[in-house]
Image 1 (cartoon, rainbow, N blue to C red):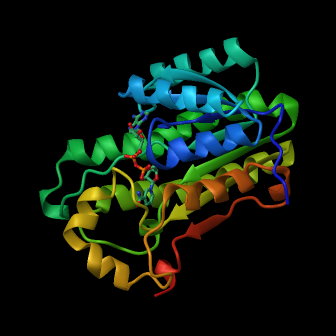
Image 2: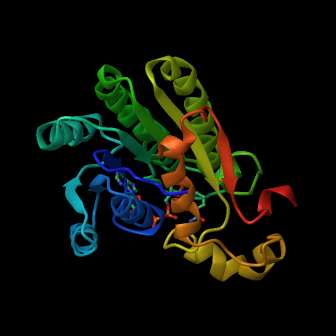
Image 3: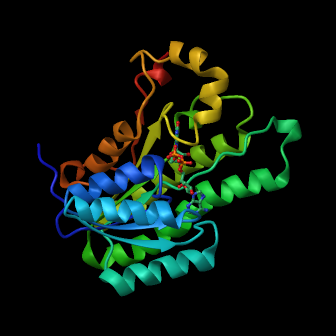
Length: 250
Ligand code: NAD
Protein backbone atom coordinates (compact mmCIF):
# COMPACT_ATOMS: atom_id res chain seq x y z
CA UNK A 1 0.00 0.00 0.00
CA UNK A 2 1.81 3.09 -1.23
CA UNK A 3 1.25 6.47 0.39
CA UNK A 4 1.37 9.34 -2.07
CA UNK A 5 0.99 12.85 -0.66
CA UNK A 6 2.13 14.69 -3.77
CA UNK A 7 0.50 18.12 -3.97
CA UNK A 8 -0.21 18.25 -0.23
CA UNK A 9 1.11 20.96 2.07
CA UNK A 10 1.83 19.75 5.61
CA UNK A 11 2.64 21.68 8.77
CA UNK A 12 4.31 19.86 11.65
CA UNK A 13 4.64 21.78 14.91
CA UNK A 14 7.74 21.29 17.05
CA UNK A 15 9.40 19.45 14.18
CA UNK A 16 13.10 20.14 14.81
CA UNK A 17 13.66 16.87 16.66
CA UNK A 18 12.12 13.64 17.93
CA UNK A 19 8.73 12.42 16.69
CA UNK A 20 8.06 15.70 14.86
CA UNK A 21 11.31 15.47 12.91
CA UNK A 22 10.66 11.90 11.81
CA UNK A 23 7.07 12.77 10.85
CA UNK A 24 8.20 15.74 8.75
CA UNK A 25 10.78 13.56 7.01
CA UNK A 26 8.29 10.78 6.21
CA UNK A 27 5.63 13.24 5.02
CA UNK A 28 8.21 14.80 2.69
CA UNK A 29 9.35 11.39 1.43
CA UNK A 30 5.68 10.66 0.63
CA UNK A 31 5.65 13.80 -1.54
CA UNK A 32 4.20 16.48 0.74
CA UNK A 33 5.69 19.97 0.93
CA UNK A 34 6.51 20.34 4.60
CA UNK A 35 6.55 23.37 6.86
CA UNK A 36 8.85 22.72 9.79
CA UNK A 37 7.85 24.74 12.85
CA UNK A 38 10.44 25.18 15.59
CA UNK A 39 10.69 27.26 18.74
CA UNK A 40 14.37 27.18 19.72
CA UNK A 41 16.66 25.20 17.51
CA UNK A 42 16.89 26.95 14.16
CA UNK A 43 20.05 24.95 13.42
CA UNK A 44 18.26 21.60 13.81
CA UNK A 45 15.28 22.82 11.78
CA UNK A 46 17.61 23.95 8.98
CA UNK A 47 19.41 20.59 9.13
CA UNK A 48 16.06 18.81 8.69
CA UNK A 49 15.20 21.06 5.74
CA UNK A 50 18.53 20.08 4.16
CA UNK A 51 17.88 16.37 4.81
CA UNK A 52 14.49 16.70 3.12
CA UNK A 53 16.02 18.50 0.13
CA UNK A 54 18.72 15.81 -0.11
CA UNK A 55 15.96 13.18 -0.25
CA UNK A 56 14.37 15.08 -3.17
CA UNK A 57 11.64 16.76 -1.10
CA UNK A 58 10.64 20.34 -0.34
CA UNK A 59 10.48 22.07 3.05
CA UNK A 60 10.42 25.48 4.73
CA UNK A 61 11.25 26.39 8.31
CA UNK A 62 9.44 28.89 10.51
CA UNK A 63 9.97 29.90 14.12
CA UNK A 64 6.84 30.23 16.27
CA UNK A 65 5.83 29.52 19.85
CA UNK A 66 2.51 27.78 19.29
CA UNK A 67 1.40 28.67 22.83
CA UNK A 68 1.28 32.34 21.80
CA UNK A 69 -1.70 33.42 19.64
CA UNK A 70 0.33 36.13 17.84
CA UNK A 71 2.99 33.56 16.89
CA UNK A 72 0.34 31.17 15.56
CA UNK A 73 -1.02 34.03 13.46
CA UNK A 74 2.48 34.64 12.07
CA UNK A 75 2.89 30.91 11.42
CA UNK A 76 -0.30 30.67 9.38
CA UNK A 77 0.38 33.96 7.58
CA UNK A 78 3.62 32.29 6.48
CA UNK A 79 1.78 29.13 5.33
CA UNK A 80 -0.70 31.25 3.36
CA UNK A 81 2.01 33.43 1.80
CA UNK A 82 4.27 30.49 0.91
CA UNK A 83 1.83 27.87 -0.37
CA UNK A 84 -1.66 29.43 -0.22
CA UNK A 85 -3.09 26.26 1.30
CA UNK A 86 -2.70 23.63 3.99
CA UNK A 87 -3.76 19.99 3.67
CA UNK A 88 -2.18 18.38 6.72
CA UNK A 89 -1.62 19.66 10.26
CA UNK A 90 0.28 17.58 12.80
CA UNK A 91 -0.06 19.07 16.29
CA UNK A 92 3.12 17.51 17.62
CA UNK A 93 4.76 20.23 19.77
CA UNK A 94 4.66 19.31 23.43
CA UNK A 95 6.46 19.69 26.73
CA UNK A 96 6.57 18.09 30.17
CA UNK A 97 7.00 19.85 33.50
CA UNK A 98 6.38 17.04 36.00
CA UNK A 99 5.63 17.63 39.65
CA UNK A 100 3.44 16.04 42.29
CA UNK A 101 0.01 17.64 42.66
CA UNK A 102 0.72 19.45 45.92
CA UNK A 103 4.03 20.82 44.68
CA UNK A 104 2.91 21.78 41.19
CA UNK A 105 3.27 25.47 40.51
CA UNK A 106 0.64 27.35 38.56
CA UNK A 107 3.22 28.29 35.94
CA UNK A 108 4.07 24.57 35.45
CA UNK A 109 0.39 23.84 34.93
CA UNK A 110 -0.17 26.84 32.63
CA UNK A 111 2.89 26.38 30.41
CA UNK A 112 2.11 22.69 29.77
CA UNK A 113 -1.59 23.30 29.08
CA UNK A 114 -0.84 26.39 26.96
CA UNK A 115 1.63 24.48 24.79
CA UNK A 116 0.10 21.01 24.56
CA UNK A 117 -3.59 21.89 24.44
CA UNK A 118 -4.12 25.58 23.71
CA UNK A 119 -1.44 25.47 21.01
CA UNK A 120 -3.19 22.57 19.30
CA UNK A 121 -6.51 24.42 19.54
CA UNK A 122 -5.06 27.59 18.00
CA UNK A 123 -3.36 25.71 15.16
CA UNK A 124 -6.43 23.53 14.49
CA UNK A 125 -8.65 26.59 14.29
CA UNK A 126 -6.35 28.36 11.85
CA UNK A 127 -5.78 25.23 9.74
CA UNK A 128 -9.47 24.25 9.59
CA UNK A 129 -10.34 27.73 8.33
CA UNK A 130 -7.92 27.26 5.44
CA UNK A 131 -8.92 23.63 4.77
CA UNK A 132 -12.69 24.17 4.67
CA UNK A 133 -12.92 25.88 1.26
CA UNK A 134 -11.02 22.90 -0.25
CA UNK A 135 -13.36 20.40 1.41
CA UNK A 136 -10.43 18.26 2.48
CA UNK A 137 -7.78 18.05 5.15
CA UNK A 138 -6.22 15.92 7.86
CA UNK A 139 -5.39 16.94 11.41
CA UNK A 140 -3.43 14.61 13.68
CA UNK A 141 -2.96 15.42 17.36
CA UNK A 142 -0.07 13.83 19.21
CA UNK A 143 -1.53 12.86 22.58
CA UNK A 144 -0.11 10.15 24.86
CA UNK A 145 -1.14 6.94 26.60
CA UNK A 146 -0.85 8.87 29.88
CA UNK A 147 -4.12 10.53 28.86
CA UNK A 148 -5.77 7.21 29.72
CA UNK A 149 -3.34 5.57 32.14
CA UNK A 150 -2.40 7.63 35.17
CA UNK A 151 1.19 8.30 36.16
CA UNK A 152 2.36 10.20 39.23
CA UNK A 153 3.55 13.76 38.79
CA UNK A 154 1.80 14.40 35.50
CA UNK A 155 -1.45 16.15 36.42
CA UNK A 156 -0.65 18.93 33.97
CA UNK A 157 0.70 16.73 31.15
CA UNK A 158 -2.01 14.05 31.46
CA UNK A 159 -4.75 16.70 31.54
CA UNK A 160 -3.35 18.34 28.42
CA UNK A 161 -3.13 15.01 26.58
CA UNK A 162 -6.62 13.95 27.74
CA UNK A 163 -7.89 17.33 26.59
CA UNK A 164 -6.32 16.67 23.21
CA UNK A 165 -8.42 13.52 22.81
CA UNK A 166 -11.57 15.50 23.59
CA UNK A 167 -10.47 18.25 21.21
CA UNK A 168 -9.91 15.58 18.55
CA UNK A 169 -13.42 14.18 18.94
CA UNK A 170 -15.12 17.57 18.91
CA UNK A 171 -13.17 18.75 15.87
CA UNK A 172 -13.92 15.44 14.10
CA UNK A 173 -17.65 15.87 14.66
CA UNK A 174 -17.60 19.50 13.51
CA UNK A 175 -15.31 19.02 10.52
CA UNK A 176 -16.03 15.58 9.04
CA UNK A 177 -18.92 16.98 7.00
CA UNK A 178 -16.40 19.39 5.48
CA UNK A 179 -14.13 16.58 4.31
CA UNK A 180 -11.62 17.03 7.15
CA UNK A 181 -10.60 14.07 9.31
CA UNK A 182 -9.20 14.61 12.80
CA UNK A 183 -7.48 11.86 14.78
CA UNK A 184 -5.15 11.48 17.74
CA UNK A 185 -2.17 9.18 18.20
CA UNK A 186 -1.19 8.02 21.68
CA UNK A 187 2.49 7.12 21.82
CA UNK A 188 3.79 4.96 24.66
CA UNK A 189 7.45 5.15 25.68
CA UNK A 190 9.33 6.55 22.70
CA UNK A 191 13.07 7.20 22.80
CA UNK A 192 13.49 10.97 22.31
CA UNK A 193 15.00 13.91 24.21
CA UNK A 194 11.71 14.19 26.12
CA UNK A 195 11.90 10.67 27.55
CA UNK A 196 15.65 10.57 28.31
CA UNK A 197 15.29 11.43 31.99
CA UNK A 198 12.48 9.01 32.79
CA UNK A 199 14.23 6.22 30.89
CA UNK A 200 17.39 6.77 32.93
CA UNK A 201 15.43 6.77 36.16
CA UNK A 202 12.94 3.96 35.55
CA UNK A 203 13.79 2.42 32.17
CA UNK A 204 13.99 -1.21 33.37
CA UNK A 205 10.66 -1.03 35.18
CA UNK A 206 9.00 0.54 32.14
CA UNK A 207 10.44 -2.04 29.75
CA UNK A 208 8.90 -4.86 31.80
CA UNK A 209 5.48 -3.34 31.03
CA UNK A 210 5.94 -3.34 27.24
CA UNK A 211 4.79 -6.61 25.65
CA UNK A 212 6.76 -5.80 22.47
CA UNK A 213 9.93 -6.01 24.59
CA UNK A 214 11.39 -2.72 23.37
CA UNK A 215 10.84 1.00 23.63
CA UNK A 216 9.34 2.74 20.64
CA UNK A 217 11.30 4.92 18.25
CA UNK A 218 10.06 8.09 16.52
CA UNK A 219 9.49 6.22 13.26
CA UNK A 220 6.99 3.87 14.97
CA UNK A 221 4.81 6.91 15.67
CA UNK A 222 5.56 8.81 12.45
CA UNK A 223 4.43 5.89 10.27
CA UNK A 224 1.01 5.88 11.96
CA UNK A 225 0.72 9.66 11.63
CA UNK A 226 1.57 9.56 7.91
CA UNK A 227 -0.99 6.80 7.35
CA UNK A 228 -3.65 8.92 9.09
CA UNK A 229 -2.67 11.86 6.85
CA UNK A 230 -3.19 9.80 3.70
CA UNK A 231 -6.28 8.96 1.65
CA UNK A 232 -6.09 5.41 3.06
CA UNK A 233 -7.51 6.91 6.27
CA UNK A 234 -10.34 8.90 4.67
CA UNK A 235 -12.98 6.96 6.63
CA UNK A 236 -11.21 7.20 9.99
CA UNK A 237 -12.03 10.19 12.17
CA UNK A 238 -12.32 11.11 15.84
CA UNK A 239 -10.13 8.18 16.90
CA UNK A 240 -7.42 7.96 19.54
CA UNK A 241 -4.98 5.27 18.43
CA UNK A 242 -2.26 3.93 20.72
CA UNK A 243 1.19 3.21 19.34
CA UNK A 244 2.93 1.72 22.34
CA UNK A 245 4.04 -1.88 21.74
CA UNK A 246 1.07 -3.00 23.83
CA UNK A 247 2.10 -1.02 26.93
CA UNK A 248 -1.42 0.29 27.54
CA UNK A 249 -3.01 -3.17 27.63
CA UNK A 250 -0.85 -4.50 30.47
P1 NAD B 1 10.83 16.37 21.98
O1 NAD B 1 11.02 17.12 23.23
O2 NAD B 1 12.01 15.82 21.28
O3 NAD B 1 9.99 17.22 20.91
C1 NAD B 1 9.07 18.19 21.25
C2 NAD B 1 9.25 19.34 20.29
O4 NAD B 1 8.26 20.34 20.55
C3 NAD B 1 10.62 20.03 20.46
O5 NAD B 1 11.21 20.22 19.20
C4 NAD B 1 10.27 21.35 21.11
O6 NAD B 1 11.19 22.39 20.82
C5 NAD B 1 8.89 21.61 20.51
N1 NAD B 1 8.13 22.60 21.26
C6 NAD B 1 7.94 22.65 22.60
N2 NAD B 1 7.20 23.71 22.93
C7 NAD B 1 6.90 24.36 21.76
C8 NAD B 1 6.17 25.53 21.44
N3 NAD B 1 5.57 26.25 22.40
N4 NAD B 1 6.08 25.91 20.14
C9 NAD B 1 6.67 25.17 19.16
N5 NAD B 1 7.37 24.06 19.41
C10 NAD B 1 7.49 23.65 20.70
O7 NAD B 1 9.84 15.18 22.37
P2 NAD B 1 9.05 14.10 21.49
O8 NAD B 1 9.06 12.86 22.29
O9 NAD B 1 9.48 14.08 20.08
O10 NAD B 1 7.57 14.72 21.60
C11 NAD B 1 6.72 14.96 20.50
C12 NAD B 1 5.29 14.81 20.96
O11 NAD B 1 5.07 13.45 21.35
C13 NAD B 1 4.95 15.66 22.20
O12 NAD B 1 3.67 16.21 22.07
C14 NAD B 1 4.96 14.65 23.32
O13 NAD B 1 4.16 15.04 24.40
C15 NAD B 1 4.44 13.42 22.62
N6 NAD B 1 4.74 12.15 23.27
C16 NAD B 1 6.02 11.73 23.44
C17 NAD B 1 6.26 10.51 24.07
C18 NAD B 1 7.64 9.98 24.31
O14 NAD B 1 7.78 8.93 24.97
N7 NAD B 1 8.69 10.60 23.79
C19 NAD B 1 5.18 9.73 24.53
C20 NAD B 1 3.90 10.20 24.34
C21 NAD B 1 3.68 11.41 23.69
